Amino acid sequence: MSKVLLEKAATRFAEEHGISLVLEKAATRFAEEHGSWRRRRPGSPSARTSVPNCLSLLSGDEAAFAVLDGIERATGCVPLVHVEDLCRAELFAAEEDAPPAAAGRYICCSLNTTIAELARFLADKYPQHGVKTHLLSGERLEKPRVRLSSAKLVRAGFEFKYKTLEHIYDDMVEYGKALGILPS
Image (cartoon, rainbow, N blue to C red; front, side):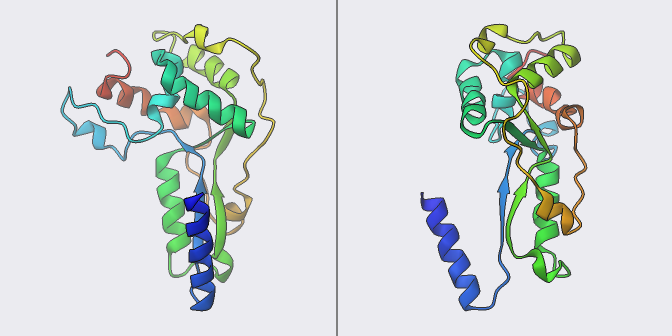
């Protein structure tokens, strides 16, 4: 609720002062933290992103999976964006030479999927970790019921670099190992 009130107040202030305001709504961010994991010492796990939720199908972390499941139940999909694309999109929208139509709200989502699709992908790509099938009980969406669209962002000229599950997950498993979420 406070986020909505803050957004409304910021929009009102921007309109009153002739400021072009860009509000970005990010999908679930699944990626390593800008490569900082490579410099982190072993034994100092700290994941401030959605990585534990993303890796929960491989780690078996029921609390992290509950968050992922809640996202799918609430939205009808699991919307994803690589953190690098999110940062690039924020910079793109904030650039001085951005089109005048760049003001307003953007959705930043490069891929819509489901837990069932994620489970199949992870089972194929990372068989050594094994998908924790006990987490998949109950009915599962096969295809997203809802698709978050980044059409406005793309129409303004932004291009996503990470568009597939494989691209989004490239570093994530290694990051999960470095954090101790997954076994080495």
